[in-house]
Every structure is written in C-alpha cells, then in structure tokens.
Length: 491
Picture 1 (tube, rainbow, N blue to C red):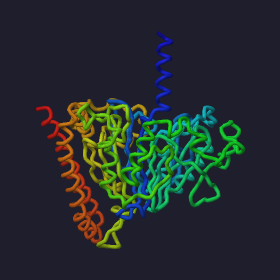
Picture 2: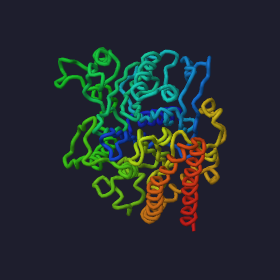
Picture 3: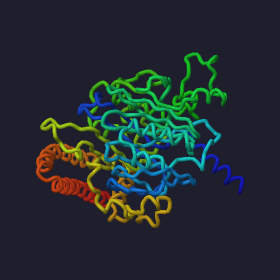
Picture 4: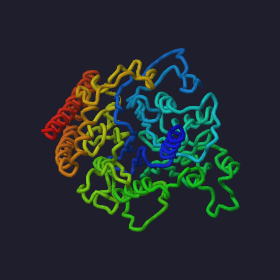
C-alpha cells in the first residue's frame, strides 16, 4: 500500500509539472486594441471543488518603520514606508493563484510554467507566494515590477519549478519567466502586438543588450551551458530560452499548443498548417475589442476539429481530453483595461483610468461585471475581513458551505455546476442572459462615466460614492440573475 501511495503521488506531481492544467493569459499592447488601452486577459485555473475567491480593496498606506515582509519559508525583505493601494483577488490556501491590480495601474497575474531545473539554489527557503504581493505593493510601473522581481529572485531564488508573471501597466506589458533558483528572463510585448501565454515558456530568442525589450539574468546562458542544456557549437540558431529551460516544450504539450494556436486563430491569422512554433507576439488582424477577450476566455474550440463534444451533444466541453481555454478548473476570469482615455474629456479622474471586468468561477456560464480597482468592494465578496486575510492566507478557517448562497462566489460556482449537467440546453439560456447583461453594462457605463467625471470635478468624495453604488447595483443584478438561473434549472 505504501508503494502504491508513493506511485500515485509521483504521478500527480508529474502531471502537475507537465500537464496544461493551470491558467492562460493574453497581453495586448496599447496600439493593438480599439480603445488604445493596454489590455490583459487571464483565466485563473486551479483544481479543487471547495476553493473560494475573495475580493478585497486595500487602501494605500504610510507606515514609518514598517515591519519587514516575512517570506513563507523563513526569509525577510525590508518593507517600504509607503505602499500602493491594491485590488486583491485571493484564493485562500493556494500559493500561486492570487491576482493584483495596484493604484498605479500595475496588474500582475501568473501561469505555472515548469522548468527543467531540479537543483534549488535557494536562500532562506527561497521566495514564492509573497513575490507578487511585494511587487503589487511597491511597483509604480510594469518595468519596475520586473526589475524588482528579478532582484528578489536573484537574492533568494525562486522556490517553485517555474512560473510566468504577466505584468502590465498603462503604457506597456511584460512577460516574465522565472526558473527554479536564480534565473529569469523578461520580454516586453510590442505596442502593436499581442502575446499569448499558456502554461509554457514563450520567450525564445534573447538579446539582453536590448534593454528596452529584454531584461534578465546575466548568467542565463552560461548557467545553461554549465547544466549541459545548451552548447553554442551545437545550437544551429543560437540560444533559445524556451527550448533550453522548459521541462516540456510547448509543441510537445497538446493542451498548451492548442490553446496558443486557438488564440492566434481568433485574434490573428487563421493557421491552417500544423505549426509547431509560434512567435512570442503577433499582430492581430483587427484591433482587439473588450468583447473579443470575453469570447476568447470562454472558448472551448467550438466549430473546430479540436472540439470533442460534437457541438455539446457528447456533454460538457469543460471536461475533454483537449484542454480548452475555459475549463472545469477555471476559478475566475479577468479582463483589465489600463490607461483608458475618454472622447468627451481630457481630464477624467485617475480612478476611472483602469477598469476590471471580472467573471467568478467559469466565464462560459457566468458574466463579466465591471469594477474599478480604487473603488471599495462590497463586504459580501469575502468570507473574512481584509485586516487579517494575508496573515491567515494558508490557514483561513472555515470557508462558506458550497451551497451558502449568501456568498456570491458560491452562487456562481453552483451555476457552473448546473450548466455542466446539461450543457447543450442550458448554455444557450445563460449565454442569452449574460450577453444581455454585459451589453447593458458596457453601454450604460459609457453614459454613467460622463456623470462620474462631471461630479468628480465638483465633489470627488461624492463621485466615489456614486461610482461604488452604481457598481454595486450592477454586481447585485448579476448575483440575483444567477440565482434566478439556478432556480430555473432546478425546477
């Protein structure tokens, strides 16, 4: 029995390192979108039926002589006297699931990207969970976040096998690949292009002399030579980071390969041939709209040979061998618009410049609703107060029961479960309802933002209350509509 348990654990570990079970991100430069915004779209995928998503708003802080950050494995990092405000999307108990958007307009999400590095060169147990939190509290730009991350990784060593942080601000977007230990590489997404990041390293050619495009460890190549992964004499096309450091290359992992290819099909040019290598970024065939990213995050390869459900006749597309972009393990989806401008004014307040569209649990069966990172989140959207949430992240106490519908996340999770039970008939109903909701929210928010701008010039505090009240009404409308759909499906 002991040998069997050990074998099962090894299989599970291997799958966690090689299967495409975690997360998916798209980054669009400001000249690649119809709004002129930098945009980030992300599906957060984590396995577990009892998981819960908390939403928090944390105000900027001035804390002279603040205590140091304490890393999970024992290290400490000096804390600054002031920190940015945060919109924090938390999944308690998990080490790498949280997302952040700070008051400087810096957004940070992550994807698991296993490396082949097996020797952990770590100081004080390395850095992992707290890395994103430190970046979110301190970084005033995406580039600054990348440099700070690189400094911390080189100082402590990264404790996970490998990970990609996708980081964007109002001007630019970066893809940052981390390798277990002290190596890292980052590349800027060109302003007129789009980068697609499944659970695989996507940076290939590296030029650290071009600091406007690349940042990274100076010993990235020499370390690979020492480990026997790269030989300048044998490499025909020079150093290729993804090919050198990946545990499983992108073209050998079907789930990653198909998701990247599908995104390029939907946003770029239709790829008819079985390509095995895609560029780091590509030019979209048309300017990307908000709704394009909603659709992408909901995609299951519909109307392609990769759809194994025969148009849902064979059941839910969230549970097939072809790992789709939207899947059973998707816990939340976000689309973030950064550096928004307004045709009716040049003097909109900063609180409206960045906007989040968030779908709880799976986005195929739930709606995207808007929020601004600097507006307070309703207390109903977390099961514990924010004051002790970080300290108790890995020991959160009792989570709400799976049928506790006083918690909106449980409502959205249950709706996703019901849709999966009869996907072909129920998905039509939820699509219709949520399309109406999203169309209304997008159209009506255009009108309301004119009011918000006008009131903000007169009374900023009143404007913030008006914005919060309006967003809460939209959120409760979504919540109650989900409850109505559940009642309809349960008879």
